[in-house]
Length: 302
Image (cartoon, rainbow, N blue to C red; front, side, top):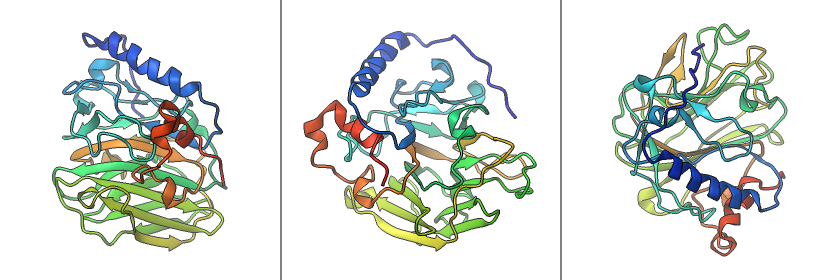
């Protein structure tokens, strides 16, 4: 597994950006709510055109688990860009100023000891959300994956893929508690240069995995059920505790890199309703101000 060398380097002006970002985090932390969001990566903690590596190599996780995603070096680092799907997140009212651009074998990943890796979701529901846009549509491109280094059941396959296939549809393919793989393919043919909002909901109570997709050219909140399957009995709990990654997959080695932008990645340990998806307008979020984000982050479990 790649080892991340800690760095104290900061780009000019990064201290001011960090202070501003911390001020927002303090405001969020002052609002009392219950936990449900395991990971929240808004990718707004940089500056336009700057490598993540040049700003310390970590991107902030605002879910409160202190589990940032890292990049390995400057040549693996995605770039902060001002190309964003929406300027304000409809569900929370939070400003959205930056996304991460992945092009040419770029990725970020968790540490092996982080709470996302060591957490047990073998009997839990799961909701994964992200905005994405592909610059080109060649081959498989994995938005979120989980590595596999000789894990018991997987062989060359990774434990988890949320990706675009070579047929240009979204697919969720991952190992479950029972040792089988769930395979859900969407029906919408994706277009290059188009932003989409994606939600994958794995519901332990119904045993279903559903893919929801919102083409932002049609406005906000117009999610469709893009594909579904049965057979979900929890996420496979690997004894190897391998890293999660964004911007690439794993198949006997790193691959299936994204050529495009990814924004606002969230992982929740509950099956969210469509009304709770981040690209659905929430009327109360504007009134709640900074606390609107926190209410969404820690939505009570069903």
